[in-house]
Amino acid sequence: MPADLTLPLSLLYGFLLVLARVGGALVFVPLPGVTGVLAPARVALALGFTMALAPRWPMIGGPAPEMGILLVWIAREAALGLAAGVAVAIVLEVLGLAAQMMSMPAGYGYASTIDPNTQADAGVLLILAQTMGGLLFFALGLDREVLRLFAGSLNAVPPGRYEPGLPAARELIALGAELFRFALRLALPVVGLLLMVDISLALVGRVHSQLQLLSLAFPLKMLVALAVLGSVAGLMPRITMELAAHVWAALHRVMGM
Image (cartoon, rainbow, N blue to C red):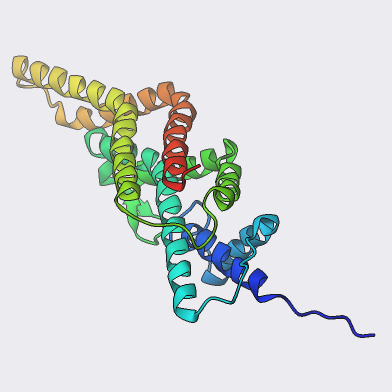
């Protein structure tokens, strides 16, 4: 007797809505190790996350929704996924923004190499910070937190019922402000010490005008920046987790969890 392999439309609709929510975060928003791969691999990753959430797929009861209503639901789910993806990207960008703040005063802004993600020229410190951010993302278990967040959101906000609005936009804007605050906390020790080095060199050059300090300024500032970065490297995981806690709290408020 042949087996019946047909799937109910309610299950198919639930799969599509969950895929739209997960795909908005994993495909359209850059995540560590995802931007550098081909589009089919990113789609496969979104499908894998969606299949992992199979026990939480909603069952669309009642008559089948019309195509227009289904498209509106998918657009809402994609908007929610994009909001979650942007919030996660903020966690990853804090080290990159701090590196941008430190690169120019430390003298590393003049040395560039190829960014493996964008295939464009980027500063050495920026690429190092992006690599560290990606490693911390997985080492601190933030990838598992993203999966738990999506699993919890399927219960708090069933697919098709999310209403994007001004409160969600305000939460993302507030997270952008948090990004600058945490990046400044990381960069301020280096920038402040380099400012003191510049002032000291200017005073010495004023007193002894015959000294050629310009040739010593760049290597001195680079060494000072490396020394301070090495001393504050232990703070990076703690600051990343602190910012991640702010991001998860904001996403819980957006999703009503």
